[in-house]
Every structure is written in structure tokens, then in C-alpha cells.
Image (cartoon, rainbow, N blue to C red):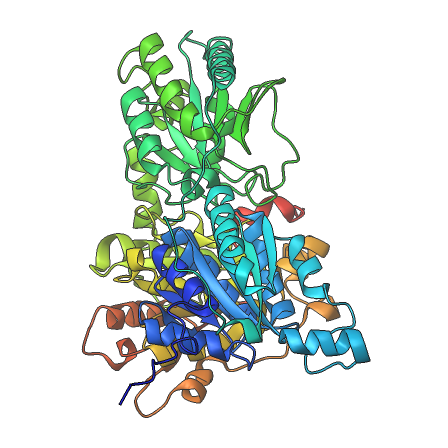
Amino acid sequence: MTETPRDNSATPACTVARYLALRLGELGITHLFGVPGNHLGPFLTTLRAEGDIEWVGTPTEGGAGQAADAYARVHGVGAAAVTYSVGAFNLLNACGGAYVERVPLVAINASPPYEQWQNYRALGLLTSHMSPRAESNLDAYRQVTVDAQVISNPGLAAGQIDAALTACLSERRPVYLEVMEDLWDEPCPEPEGPILCHERPFSARNQRMLDDAVTALLTLIEEHPGPDGRPRPIVWAGEEIDRFRLGEQLTELVEATGVPFCTTVGAKAVVDEDLTQFHGVYNGHASHPDVHRIFKDWATCRIGLGAWSTSKNLEGEQCVGDDWVMAANGGVSVGTSYFPDVQLRQLLPALQDALVKSYGFGGLAADYYAEAHAHHGARSDRPASLAHHRASLRISGSRSRQPEPLAYDGVFDRINHFLGHETEQNWTVVSDAAFSLIGSMNLSLSAGQYLSQVSWLSIGWSVGAATGAALAPERGHARPMVFVGDGAFQETCQEISTHTRLGLRSVVFVMDNEHLYGIEQMLVHPSYFAEQAAESDGADFYNVLHPWQYERLAAVFAGPKAPANGVAVAHTSDLDDLLVRLNDPTDPVNTGPLLVRVRLPRHDYPRAMAYKVPKTS
């Protein structure tokens, strides 16, 4: 009897779903964040069968995008998956932030099947989530991605997926893949060759442009000496040092030349902040007063390397001057001259070689705090040295002797002392926008220990972002420590559910200043925070929040096998006691996420924002 040959056509070796799963796994992605839907289901089934990538379902698509964004900042690329229109438009905000802040993010949108689109064209029949504008999702995502593809033909799927992922790595910005539901299980060729990042080619013309930029930069330094005739430059390291993974090159440059440096807020902790040359975080008028004096008054020229000109990097300042260098976005401005198509990856080693050649190894080494202190006659309001400045940041946060009401600065001073002197655990600080960002920028941290969204500033970003930070392989051993305002937390509090479900031992400090949008009040009517306003409450009605008992939400998210805890702190002694508990592995507060309601006076604000508040007589 002759055996009938088996028909393998029903189970192809590779499908569109498997192809995409394999490519994401090749990029080292270990977790895919999102909210499921029927159009996405076949892909998630294949993803689980492959076994290399774990699906992390989140309560909201926005939270999925925030988690994928933070995961990508740490790991180098991240991904989120949602369903058509209702899910995709919720994810759009996170994708917009990733686009602005140059975060490589893969946005996957599962759309209605090809058959339904054909029915609409022929009969006008709309089904769930469809729009009469067939390109509505695609057009929206074209505004916030470097490549956007609709996959409607399985024969073209492999090329479209590869093109998008290549663009994501090469441009270091989000891409969009819209896949019709009935294509997931369609046959597709096996992946061939790796997905590679394609850098811009470095030609002879680029070399000349680079040489001219370095020459102009050296000239700027020479034309701006200090009173003693010595060069006095300072480097301002920025976000692109992180995005292009240039931390080692920056470290080599400052160690070889000795040049002092600050960072932007967005590049905080891009390298270790205990490096001898690190002089602080510069953020315009919101900088620590000591840092502002050193950066703007003592240094005679400023060299921005990968730094972005944003309102949160130049707080209260509208422009840079002709004694600045700004190397970012693929070009270099030196004073009033501009050199296009000079890449940061080539500039850093070329600048290092030129500075060492001109000034010798370590020839620009200086302690600008000590120099300024000596020059001004050892004034008591200036730190005697860089070491003195650093010590003042940490000593001020030691355990209090008398219980006092908490204030923004006291909380962050205390946390700084805890991180530097009292804990042996590894932490990743995730800061939200507004007062939390301003308050946390002077924490003293190690490389990779800080995440913030400094340009897009979507309030509530930090809560979802903590999930991605905790799951990224590079920081998976670190506990997330989140600082978020009460208004921001009300936007994204559901993401604590994900923390609980995954057993993340996050600590989320909700800064509750008596249910007020503090930063909005500061931006609209800063006089509210002046002394004469402190006795009466004249907050604008639209900035007043509904009061929540934030710590009690932990009981809502907790389950029999998924603990979560909540506490409230209002005095320095409360915070001291809590920090002691965080160091005790047997304490129940460390068994899952911890919600900490930090009760603050409504009129309080970080001292760094004082420049905005009118002076009182």
C-alpha cells in the first residue's frame, strides 16, 4: 500500500509572526510591553511559542509605551505592541516622546484583516476599531517615526520588517509596523543575515569638516582665557552621549585632558558622578548656585558635547552665547560658525587628541571650585573645593535630630545621603517631570543610575518607565526608586499594577503637596509661592486636584501572592524610619512595590525654582 505524502503547506516553517518574533529576539529584546486585542492575538501566541521574549501586559497602552521607552534607554532598543486605532492612538504619546528624545522604539500595531479592508472598499462595511480613513493610524505615526510600514502582503513582509528595524537602530528613533491580522500566520522566508546599524559613512569631506571644527574649537578656547592667561573651558555633556553609547569615550576624554565637565539634566549619570572632573549638573537658572557660578561665571567657554538646547537643560535661559560650542544633531556650532555633518562619535576622540597635543596629558585639569574660592578671597558662601561642594550635598541629608515637616529639598537631601552612605543596594532613580525632576537632579549617582524624560515631559511617565527600567537586562539587578508628583501619578497610577504583578520591589515616592499642580501654578502664577501668599491660598482653581489617599492604593493592587505596600510620611523622622526599613530585607515593605505618600506643604517648592518666584519686601 502506497503512503500518501504529508501536506506541510498548512504549517509553514516560518510565518510573518515568527519572522518578527525572531528579529526582535535578535535585537536582544527580552520583554515586549503592550495591551492585547484580537488582532494581536496570533502574534502573541507565536511569541510565546518561540520562548525568547516575555509578554508583559500592562493596564494601559500609554504605560506599555513608557515601559518600552525606559527599557530602550537602558538596553538600546525596546518594543511595544497594541491593537488598531483605540490602542495605537493611546500609544502615540509615548512614541512621540521617544521620537523627540531619540529613543529606539518599535511600535507594533495589529490591524483588522485584509478581508475586512476589502469589504470596506466594496461595501462600506466598518468593523471594530476601523476608520473610514484607511491610513489614519499610519499617517499619525509617520509624524513620530523614522519609518512607518503597513504590512498587507506576506511576500513583502520580511523586507518591510528588516527595513524598519534597520532604520530604528541606525536613526535611533521609533519605527512603526502595522500588520493585518490575517497575515500573522501567512508563510514568510526565514531571516537572512543580521539586522545592523548603518552609521553615516565617514568620507574625506567629513574628515576636512571635522578638522575645521576641532581647529575652530581650539581657537575658541585660546581666545577665552582666564585672568591668569590659562584656558578655562568646561564641557557640558548631553543626551547624545547616552543615546549613542559614548560614555566610555567621554570618560577617556575628560581623564586624558583633565577638563572639568558638567552634564545636562537629561544626561545625568551618563558616566559616574564621582569622576574627579565632574563638577555637577548644569540646568540654567535652576542649577545649584555653586554649579551655576562655576559653569557660567568661572569657566570662560562652554563645550556642549551631545547636549540639547531645551527648556529643562537651560532653565530660564533662552539661548547660548558666542563663547559656547554645541555639538549635537549631526553638526557643531562653534561661536557663530557652524560645521554640518560632524558626527559626535568622530568628534570626541579627535578633540581628545587635539587637546592633549596642545596642553599635554591632563593639562586642563583643574578644580574650578577651589580656584574660584581662592580668587574671591575665600568667601564663606562658596565651597572651598570640589570635594567640599560634594560633601555639602550629602552631609545636609544626614538623619535629623528633631522631627520637622518634610519639604522638597529636605526629602531629596535625605535621599541623597541614603543612596551615598546608608544603602548597599543598587537603585535606579526614575524621575518624573516638574518639581520631581528639578529636585532629583543634584542626587549623586553612578553611571546608568538615573532616568528622566527631559524634553517631552509627559507627566506620569516615570511610573510606567520604572517597569521597563527594572526589566532591562543591564539594570535588572537594581530596584527602581521613582519620584512623581501627585497630579502626574493620578495620570498613570494603574501601572503600579504591573509592578505588583511582576513582583518588582519598586519604591514610588508620590510627592503630595496638598493636591496642587505645583509646576503649573509656578509657570502661570509664581507669585503664589512668594511669602506674602503663604498665609492665604490663592491657587488657580484649575490647578487644584482631587485629594487621594495614595498609600491606600497598594491594597487595591495587591493580591494573595502579589504583595504591595503603602505608607505615608509627613515628617523627617517618618522618612528616616522608612529608609531604615528599606535596608532590612526581612521587612514586609520590601516584598513588593511600595507606595510612599510624601506629604508636603502646598506652598513648598524646590529651591532650584526660586529664580521664578518674585522677591518679597
